[in-house]
Image 1: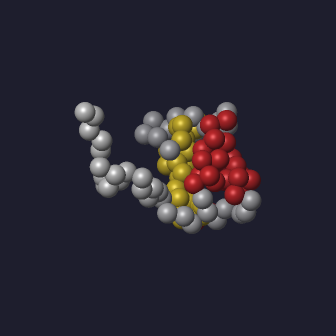
Image 2: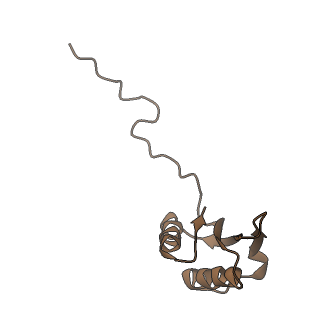
Length: 101
């Protein structure tokens, strides 16, 4: 005789809570070559993706130890998981973006 799992098993049939609760401020980290204007390029990219101006206070630039690359952290206000995913999809298509988190 086949044993069936009890229907009241914890976690079964329950929706998982999202790791990020929206709306939320979310920080993206975008890395590229240390070229003149990379941080501005990222700011303009996010301005387009967000549909609003990006505050200079929301952006932090960190060059690599040898100065070849630069990491730009940018904090934005997201309303949904779909919006976060669409931004990552766009970052994936950008030629100047080497890596992103």
